[in-house]
Amino acid sequence: MKPIKTFFYAFLVALTALWWFTDSTALTSVTNFFGWRDMLMQYSGVLAIGVMSVAMVLAVRPVLFETYLGGLDKMYRLHKWLGIAGLVLSISHWLMSEAPKWLTGLGLLERGARGPRAPAASDPIRQFFSSQRGFAEGIGEWAFYAAVALMVLALIKKFPYKHFFKTHHLIAVAYLALVWHSSILLKFDYWSGLLGPVMIILMVAGSVAAIVVLFGKVAIKRRLVGEVAGIRRHDALKVMEIDIAFQGRWAGHEAGQFAFVTLHADEGAHPYTISSAWGNNGRLTFIIKALGDYTRTLTHRVKLNDVVTVEGPYGRFNFEGGRKHQIWIGAGIGITPFIARMQALANAPDGRKIHLFHSTRVYDPTAIGLMERDAKAANVALTVFSDERDGLLTAQRIAEQVSDWRDSDIWFCGPSQFGQSLMKDFAGMGLDQSQFHQELFEMR
Image (tube, rainbow, N blue to C red; front, side):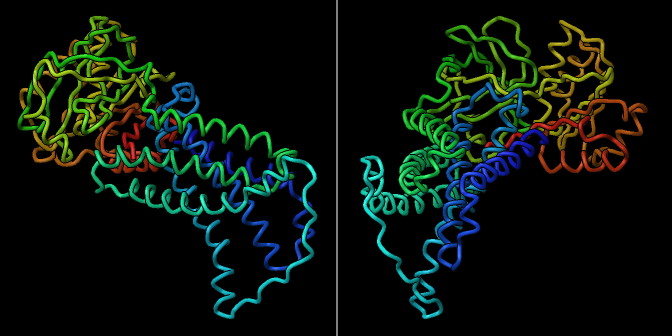
């Protein structure tokens, strides 16, 4: 989490500093309410289109940034924060534009006196920008309404994923309209200052990303077509394993990574952790739990030889670290990356001492037997906690079983709140938070 938090705040501070240095004289020349309002509208507009541009770039899943931001799961969390920031800033910008009109109409604010009309611009570029102001204001207002509606829908978890998948792409249209709005209404002198080149880079990069999204070309070079080659069901766990055999060559993956899988075109791509180690045999396995409206239908919708599309791999849940001891915690379906890692270690041990804790609500002897087989082959100590039989898994119970837990890297995959609770408890017991690694497997 630290890299994306650092980037988020550093970006806002950097953009603020660039605006300040570009227009610092404005602060000393503002003398009335409307002057402050115009200045703050410029500032909020710069921040709003800035965060929206970065969010749009992240929407195309640029793997280049995974190393710096901690993986695509962290990048999607940053994308969400940027979207919320863009929403708040856009609403603030709109209110600053509209509120004075409302207050004037109610008699609570006097209309600002108009100064002398500025002389007409002499150069053609300024003339063009000036001529487009009315259109830019109108298109920006409607784009704002559309963007707010779409971003609010994206934040509503109960809004069905297949509808979210389709409607969220429309934000790219609203973004392109807001780029035009910002380009025309940004104070003209900004373009020749420190801020100008940065805004050009942000808006051009965001516009290119928006076009990629609109034409459905996101990560097209990372997609591969395959077919369902095997299906195994664990009904007690409401889980199914799906083997996929590729028609082309899969580039390979590391244990712990995930991919976007399109099993049905009407539903779109869903992210699933790859639960098999790469054996260079053209096959992958995904373990999918019936958690939502769509995944509950897979047991009767997925058939052998169905054509599927897989895009990836993504993620940095890669079990790296300098410590010789690791503690793995897989809660529920969060066990999948650890299964892949155990399969990889069975063929290529890394010399670490590893203790795996698996927390499950339902104890399925068949599934646990397969896990015990993989753990034995990988020389991993396995402890299974069944909620009904053993109670809840806690940081204290883990510490009681692993004496050198303070000198361990801890890797967690499972429900987000459970992971946050464990990290808080371990930190309270003296663990450095940098030793706790959690996958943020929420894409919206």
